Image 1 (cartoon, rainbow, N blue to C red):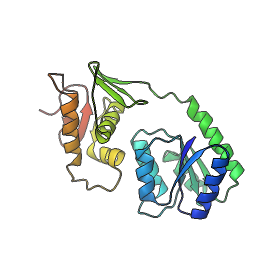
Image 2 (cartoon, rainbow, N blue to C red):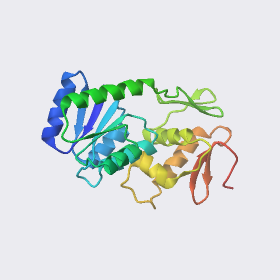
Image 3 (cartoon, rainbow, N blue to C red):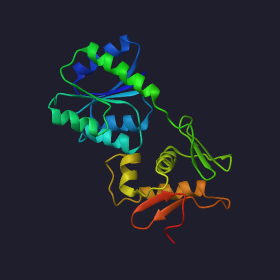
Image 4 (cartoon, rainbow, N blue to C red):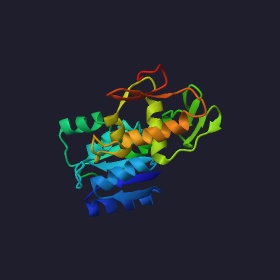
Length: 229
């Protein structure tokens, strides 16, 4: 599996990387919350191993929240010295698939990774997302409107996928900022409106019915009736 390890202790990270490498896994390592968030949300992984306490202004649960708000179902194994029952429950309820307390045996870590891999293989990722005549293929990241391909930039694609996964719901600007850009953005920025305008120009063009709509003062939705004159 292609794994991302976010762990600030370099010695611990080196031991985990070596152990997983010997088991046949490919492991990339980040040592702080900011770079960990960027790589966790910006690339495709089979598994994320996530330390709870990290430098860089973000802890492990912040990264986990950002992943889950993106509807990222990548299995996440939380690694933490916080071993109380309340902390374990918090980690799992925040979206973690498993929680392993430090110190741990590397054999147990490998066994838990194998269990997560089996469970992930049983999950059914939709092959196609559809809103009217707009389709999106999550595995290939291809988008079509009326059967014709739509070429999107990475941020535009992420916005569209998030909207389509929440079809019938109103998605707020804050949700989009966290899901697509991460936490370090001014909530008053117009970056969402700029990107949404570009996305609309590509999706709703050539006389096609308008699919992406604004909910005044709240956010956006896709499909359905017009809610913003």
